[in-house]
Image 1 (cartoon, one colour):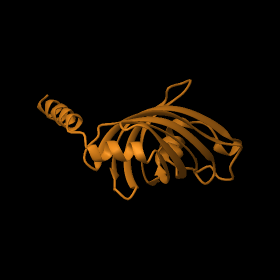
Image 2: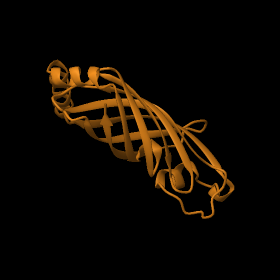
Image 3: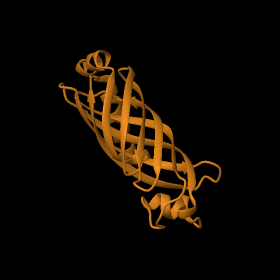
Image 4: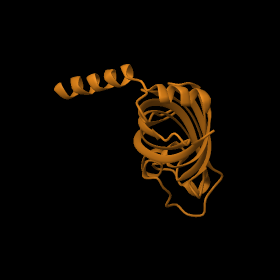
Length: 172
């Protein structure tokens, strides 16, 4: 219980001490383009981000698990800090293939949870919803690095599992 209270106090102090640097930066440089590894875009992907408000952004991207394709869209709510900002996000993603040549695919959440009992060589389509948390470092040059953890829920049967991702973006 004490850990929860400490975390809550830290979050409130972060929100009340929002950096004017980040507020101005996110108003001035609204668009970002970058690469992501892991996460809802699977193995590797290209992502674009639009800062609607300093504390809220929308992003989307396309990716690949090398044997299959993916796309994702998410909204992020930032607790603005100085240059490091924790955030909450929610989104949806699709991972699909018309058929692959091998049955051993990654990530393990796809292979062992979402495709359990399914032969991926025959093709598949997996739609997921996911909430998550992340942290972003944003340099004043426009370079950004982020790390995310999420909980994926497959639509229809609600099988679920955890996954993580990281990436780098350039805001202009």
